[in-house]
Image (cartoon, rainbow over all chains, first blue to last red; front, side, top):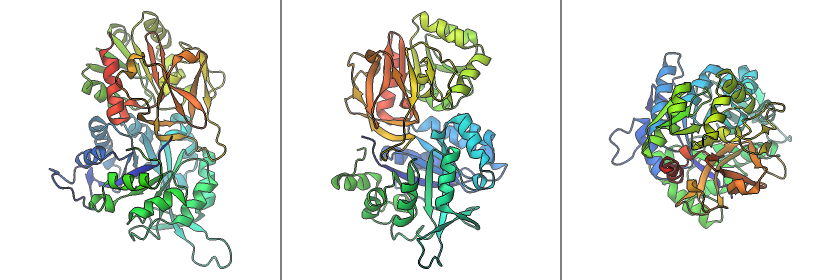
Length: 257
Length: 203
């Protein structure tokens, strides 16, 4: 049976992990390869690396890093941040990334999704959506707006509609981050996640808000996410991947242990 | 020496490193002489079927690969590289595959809550324990999948292992010296590395 995935996320700046990762016994907690190895040993199902520098000079550093990761860990990982065109995608995939994720550039040039899928297949093209709940929906159903440029720029685009359109263009997976819940540790946005997961027939990775074990259970069952992503609770060792998976297994959720 | 056939379709570093870890000398190449001199061949691949076949053609590799397989050289196709071994794919109607294995490649149909691509860790069910690639692999081991199309071999006996996703499909193919893995052994942690080691140890 296909299992639900637990995915730690690492923010990368100029080839280094930022936002602090506290692992005992790591020689260098800023080296993405060292951190990745720890998660590999903990049986993380995938890793996501988000490059937050995203400058042109930085692309070579990023590709070099991806090569180094792929040579050291034998598990799937996704790379996102600052992807501009098909050539960037090709470079990252050739360097060993399983998938690439795009947000800003996909909004600006939706054609890039179909072009990339035609070249490399939908299975490696992930659409990242940063979504923020619209406050004044009144009696209407809840809705969410897409933000780009690392959450700085509102687009006026409806997240649900965009998810459907991107999947029609070929996107093979959606990495969905709730900007309202991100960093709160209050749990994932179940309503948002469920709305998107029900609307598209590709896998959905929920992100933003994980703080407790039951948050993973809720988002993977009630909200029907296929995977749950988290950063700080793993980096600060509040829970290990294994603990999360054992908890889920105990509640009857299929996980790989 | 193992030659990993480089036709510009992704994911080659991890395959190379994994084979080296498994004890092999592995080179990434598209040179005819390297491919002829190698004891074993690996055809990796991330991408679309049509593009991949036209790349292989452009680089003059189609007849070469078929010839090497005929000479009984051990050959492993991974993911798209496995699919290319078949006659054709629904991903690229009208494009001929290598045709080394009988059968075609089909698309999963997204229905009744089945998400496509089939993405993540799933169990393999071993059908043929004698398949050398599966030596010391436990039944129901997890491996990593990432694909929207699946191979449907003409002969059921070609499926050395299958996987359940909406339907049963062949996830390990084996016919004489030809092996295929629909999942990514190079991304499947211990189980995957074990299979690559099995391939490296083949005589």
